[in-house]
Image 1 (spheres, one colour):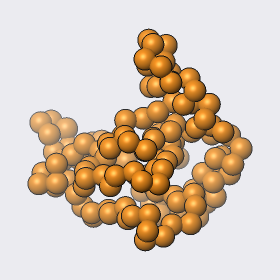
Image 2 (cartoon, rainbow, N blue to C red):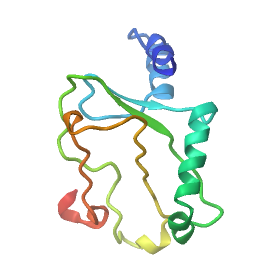
Image 3 (cartoon, one colour):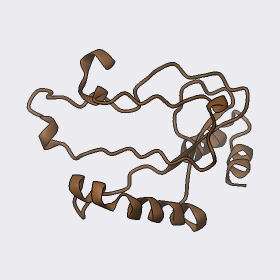
Image 4 (cartoon, rainbow, N blue to C red):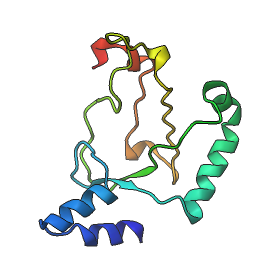
Length: 138
């Protein structure tokens, strides 16, 4: 329902549709049959976020403080027949740059939560440990 509403608002090439697109959708590679839908923190979404945070509380409390903020909440929707995405990074390189070091920057934690049963026929999400600080990976 949320996706149908969003797609209806961005269905033409008008300035208002382009503005709505940024409000409803994030940037995503290989856009054909793939959507990065921004979610509202209500109802079932709020319940899943709370359950996930509760399940991961020991991991999260060791990495972030009580001042941590949720900065993005989205759902990647991939329709059948969508082409596979090339291997890519989702965040910029986190490394010492000039006068700013990784230790000075707030932590960024990304959590993937499947919202349906996943099978190998759907394709895999490949995560490469430690590439967030690897120049070669970027």
